[in-house]
Length: 560
Ligand code: SIN
Image (cartoon, rainbow, N blue to C red; front, side, top):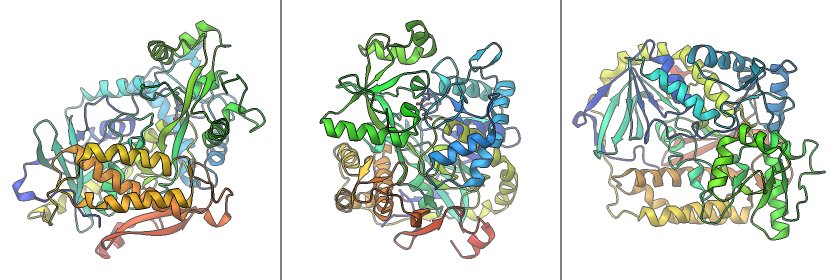
C-alpha cells in the first residue's frame, strides 16, 4: 500500500511559511518558472541541496531549436516525432518546436545568456537524430552551466523570491483535490515546515540514481513522480528511461557524461580493434537516435563479452577539441585520458526519464494548483525516446506556459486556503527502519540487471519479486531524506517495472528481448494513478495523454 503522506503531521503544529507559489527544484525549469512568477507573486524556491547542484548545470551538449537558415520548426517537429517512435503527443511537440526559438532569443536578450557564435551567428552543432545543425551551445560544452549561471544571476533582482537551500520536499499537501502547499524538511535543522501556497510547481528533475551507473547528480532520486502520484496526479511513460550511449567508463571512477556533441563534431564509436560499430546499422551512423546507438552498443558488447567500447575523437584536430570541448578535455585528462591522443572508454548510463507527471500544455496536472515542468513532467514531447538536446528546451518552453494559467489558480486557491486548518495525517508506521544504506545499492543493482536497457518477462519478474519483498519500506517511519528517498525510489521502481511488464513490445528506450518487435496496439501511454490502497493503470491512446483534459471542476466533484 502506498501511504498518502510519507510522514505523520498536524498542520496546526507546524510552522507555516506563507507564499503564493512554491517552486521545487532549481534547474532550468524551476529557475525560469520562479523568475517569471516572481514578477507578480511571492515565490518560495526550494532546492534539495544548493542552488547549483542540478542536472541542468552539468548539461553539456546544448539546446535544440530551429534557428539555422536551413532549418524550420517543421523539420525539428519531424525529427522529434521520429525519435519518439510513435508515442509523441503532436500538439505538445508543435508547441515545443514553434515556441522554442522565441524562448532562446529571450534567454539571450533578456536573461543575458551567452551562446557560442561564429561571425555573429549562433554556432549550431548537431546531435543524434537531428537532420539539421540546430543545437546551440555555450562555453563549448558548458551549456547548462552558462544557463544556470545567467538565470541565478537574475534571482538577486527579485525581492519577491526567497530561496530555501537544503530543503527536502516530502509531500504535496491537498484538500479536496486542491493543492495547498508542501511539507518541506530543513535538512540542516531536521525540522519540517509547512509552505502554505495555493500553487506548487514541481521541477525536480530526473531519477538516474535509481541505477548504479548514471550521468545524473546524486540528488536525482526521482522523488517528484511518487510525490505527485500520492497527491492524486497521473503519471505515464515510465518504461522509457533513456540511457546515454557515452559515459566515461573507467574503473573506480563515477560515470561522467561525454556529450553527444562530440559525435556531432566527428567522433566515432569503435570496438577494441578500432572498428566502427554504427557503420551499416543506421543511415545516420553514430548520429542515429540514442536508443538505436545504445541498442547496437549493448549488442556488440554482449557478443564480444566486454563491458565498454570507445569513443574515438583523435582524428579531430587537438586545438579544436580543446577549444570546443574544454570541460570534457579537462575532466578526461584529470582521469588519465588525453582525448586528443587516445580513444575514450565509454559505455551507456542511465540518463533521462522520458515519462513523468502528466501535464497539459500549460503545465497543469490533474490536481488543481499543482504544475510540473522539465524532466519530472510528461508533456508527451519525448514519446518513447527523447531527441537529444530537447530537454533544456522543454524546460524553457513549458515553464513559460505555466504562467498562462497560474494567476487564476493562485487567485482561486488563495480563497480556499483557510480550509487547511486542522489538516492532519496519522497512520500506524513501522518503527523498525530498514537499513537504507544497505538496501539502496541492492535496489540500484537490481534495476540495472533486471530493468536496464534490455528487459524480459523473466528479468522483470525478478524485479517484481525484489520489490514485493521490500515494499514494507513504504510503511516505515523515517526521519531523514535518505529514508524518504528510498521510499520514493521503491515506489517509482514498482511503477517502472509494472509499465515495462505491461508493454509487451519493444519501442524506443524500452527493449523487451521476448517481444523484439513494435506493435501497433501499443501506440498507447500506460498511465498510473493512485486508487484505493495501491495504484490503478489505464492504457491511453496517443493523442489523448491527458484523457478528457484536465477539467479541475469535474475532478474535484468526483471527490478525488
Ligand atoms: C549530451 O550532451 O550528449 C546530452 C544532451 C542531452 O541529453 O540532451
